[in-house]
Amino acid sequence: NAMYRDKMHNKKTEKDSIMTVILSRLAERGIGSDPAWSGLAGSLEAMAVQLRLPEEMRGQLFLLAKYRDIGNISLPENLVNKKGKLTEAESELLRSHCESGYRISQSIPELMPIAEWILKHHEVWDGSGYPLGLKENSIPLACRLLRVAEVFESMTAGNGFEEKMTREDALREIEQYSGVQFDPG
Image (cartoon, rainbow, N blue to C red; front, side, top):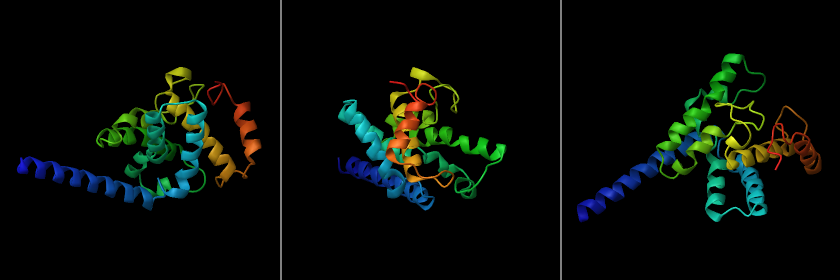
């Protein structure tokens, strides 16, 4: 029993250290850090409360907000942090982070429940998203909620490419693109 207990403890410690390394690499790149995701997590929580989603799904949405871009760890740092216009080849490589994130999250027990969401988090209501080109209700609800929250946070925080918008203007714009970029429900 002591041997199995020790084995179980060491396995958890090893898993925790792998997760710590991944998280520190992501933080070095500004992914999953407090400023980058706390607003996003708050927006998702507000939507989850409004939709009366179960507590378990709220926790999973929190994880999705934090680790949605975990696949960026497999990309060159200069690409992930590039300012300005990307070439077509750079855009294609950057889009691969969804598949990389899916594979990484499948190997981390805490993230396995959201692995599919990580894969599909850049899908768009009208089918113009990636990597699978899903549309409408074939996109998981969590990904549709994340899409709205990410765009809202980007517009209200100002993302360097556009002017910062007021909360009201951002909500109006989201409503305007409802049924195209966003779930109309």
